[in-house]
Length: 270
Image (tube, rainbow, N blue to C red; front, side, top):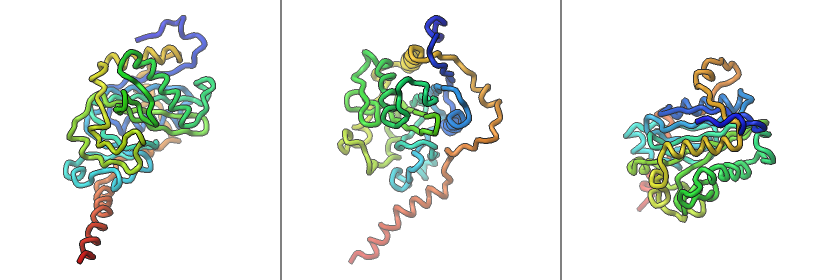
């Protein structure tokens, strides 16, 4: 999809990378590289990732967020990303959309978490116009009171990133790997995962969502497609990615933290 040249004048440039089935860890590495080493605005759209993978925020603790035993038994990869936000399990049914921008890319936007979140919701309000009952609820995108999009951010001195995992579809069994977080949004009202989320596919097709997103961006930016190879071919000596795959040993030690208090309680019980 291209935007007519006459409509691009005066808009900031945003380069667009479209991926399909790209491994989420590699995507996170690319995103952090662009955030920290590029001076341009970027949008990355990745339509699904190959293997079911758990992704935690930078401060996430496996013992608090994951059902460790089934994660270990099923050998589910666990990644700690470079941005904040909550824990998700992603797979081929997840659509990822990322905005990486200079602080002056959006007029009058204050480079702080809440204004960036609000701006993103205005973008998606256009995308979902006439589709469902779209809202930003706390830090989530919802239809009504059912979550279908989780957000995370990072803000540097001159730039920011806002990325979203959209649940176009999900496997029910995968939700069993995640614990109910102790710090949950108020609107969740202690609902379990399956009562709290919904599938985007019940509201919009994959291709329509992606096309609408690109079309909406074209009303705010001058969007130019970019090939991933152009980024990968540029060496970056100043960059070392911080998103990483947790080692099995790290997850096993999280299990020890969970099991030890139980063992102690049993030994102290009469």
